[in-house]
Length: 542
Image (cartoon, helix red, strand yellow):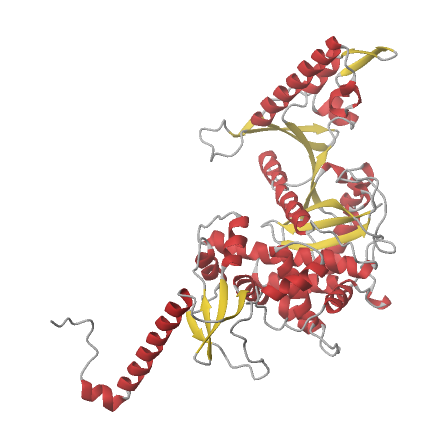
């Protein structure tokens, strides 16, 4: 009994056109592929190597699309190195995305991955590449430096990437700025590692300060790398001035947290030669004008977001505007946060009352608990009811100081976007889980940290591309699924073949978003004349 599988055409026409030969070759190739897969599944073929291929295929494409590769290559034109600086930087950035750690760890990690042009890189190459990123520029190019750190090659990369992006997107109207601290478990360089206010609660260790500037869409513009004793309140004006001189930004609204605000900072921002608009968080408890006048006003709140009906709704938010001698404040109240603050305080007070009744004083040394206590004598305490009432004034509230020509509700919503910078820092902290322990020079430390910035540039690019197609994957799933994609090299009858593992989870969607084709399931490996003959009994490289 016969069955028609497909109609290919008339035999004489296929022979005359050469299509028959092509069909036979294609059929033979398919049959060979099926045989290779079958014998590999049965364990009959020696395995030469197993390599992860997903990470480099996707992020090499994004490295090109964002301009990172071109910018670094252009900066290196005319300079001779015995290895590719650009490849060393890419390897470090890729490693930071998938297995955050030291450059020494990256050198070992690369052996299990297929990363074009990185096969011959050695550890000292990675150190040299980090040093190049953080190298000081010549004195004549130091005019735009901050008081805290010199200009270096990483600044040129940021400026070139911004110039390229500015051609693709609209003008910059809004920027977000914040800082964090990163402590050192090693020496901390010559000058950059200093002791200061630690946001990691490690005052015993040297640290550095990292500042980040993002645009209104959450795209990283630049990062600043300063000594660890740099205070937040001194950083905003140098950053503002650098945005003007480095990126040609002349009129923009800057959004920053309350740690940046001071009378001097406000005056500098409002100077005629700057004329910048700003939205700055105000200190509710320590600024007398805010505490005694702004929060005391009984003006009505305006509802921006009503109470949530579903978990997808935005957080309930109320705002009101208060003017004090021409100074504009926006008071914001999040009803969800207000309820949480009240509940947290009640729990603390209840715990304190229980401890005081039992005579236990262990909680007195806790700053969060101590604020609700007053001393009635040596080693005697009681609940401070006035302080409890005072703290209730701040439940769910934050206060903004602004000169922006925006509606009060818009000011509040723009400030809430500062979470993008906070998320950036959370990401960069995870990318720096293994801190620059082995770097002893400021230059290599700056380069090491800057690679986290470049990693986040690539991550943000991929997330934007996924969001365009309404995909909102967990980042951990994206990384895990890409990392699962492997290429196994096997040998059959003296020929080598590459077998791709199954595409799982988010992997296929991520490949499409990046504009990368998934490799075929089976393909013949290109001959490597320098490769030694395989030993069928050898253990495969993992």
